[in-house]
Length: 86
Length: 394
Image 1 (cartoon, each protein chain N blue to C red):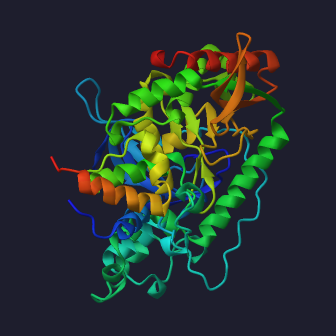
Image 2: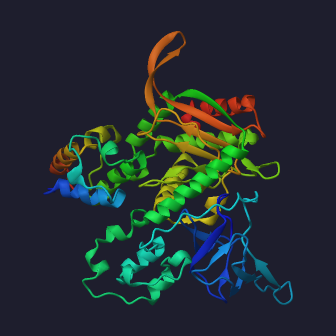
Image 3: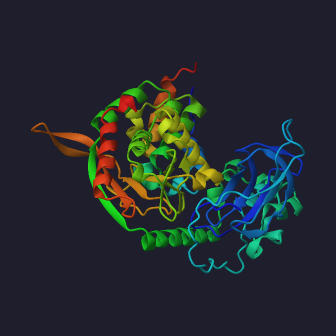
């Protein structure tokens, strides 16, 4: 599986959780929890939505790695490359 | 019109979900009511048959006004059905605070109930073209139903569907001002009437955090549990033992017969509601997590139920991982206690003559001196702490 536009994927997932957030206005290296005001339930919902959409299951210990826009896009691209759909 | 919180004086029926002749059962949702804070689904509290709807859609009525007449369902044992006039129980029977001026409606801005906004999106009705029949000229669902659906390129067609299911975003500035006003009124009343005392302590969450990390590492994301669920469960269990923390003050203390735990949910864009999770002490941690997810989602999408607005005997406010270290809460009248948790942080921790680093949380209690004192409050916090040291038993 390949994900062509991880940035767009994140924007789409985030729209359901924090519809007012414009990714273009966020520093890509700042944790989304701060930049987009996500609480732990929001973040869990984001991880859940990512799983539903792509099959990528991010373990809890990797949450810090995907918390910024740049971290998320790198992680998702790498995970999609190694991910084999069931 | 049920009182959906100590701060509510009036409400507007914006939707009927039943019609005369319908059979209803206790707990069924029969109507949706617009309050200053949000739209609330009204549950019926008895079985029967709807005889008559007494309040038309869009009409603002005072708390205590009968909304509908329900006749007891005919059964074999009794004769003809006996009509019973029903209005929802006035759950918070403290005298209402002196009438405060309602938040003024900004001129030129159309006030729209979230449901009407959603319905308008679905039908492609331009809200600007409608004349509101609700209070203060607010556009309610009925107005949208009467409105003319727009052309294909209108509203709904252009808007991505996600926006339509995110009514908290769509909530008007007026709604937000009204909510801020309602919160201010309620909290002012709390500070005026409730002699608060405050306690604070620090819980070692080493055991709870390791247990949770281990459990979550073996679970798919949909089944993962947040630390908040463990904290809530511990509070719910402790509330069983320390009764002076769970109940309502209505001309004296009335201990709650069950543990319905209020959970303060902050809304995106500001504001706060504290719906109850029913029988939280009897739910497993997984069930409690599911209930928490459900109630947070519905709180944020404006779909809470009437019983959730009135049943809590004790509330927990949990600042979460982005929050401050500790929170000294204001008790929600007519409740008598509020437990606050700051964010979970690693702190130096001395234990058994050794210094280590542990995940910890600052826990606070605001409680009502008319009902308890610091001794009982301390016992309550200690019981929560003890429970958290055995997470597998929660």
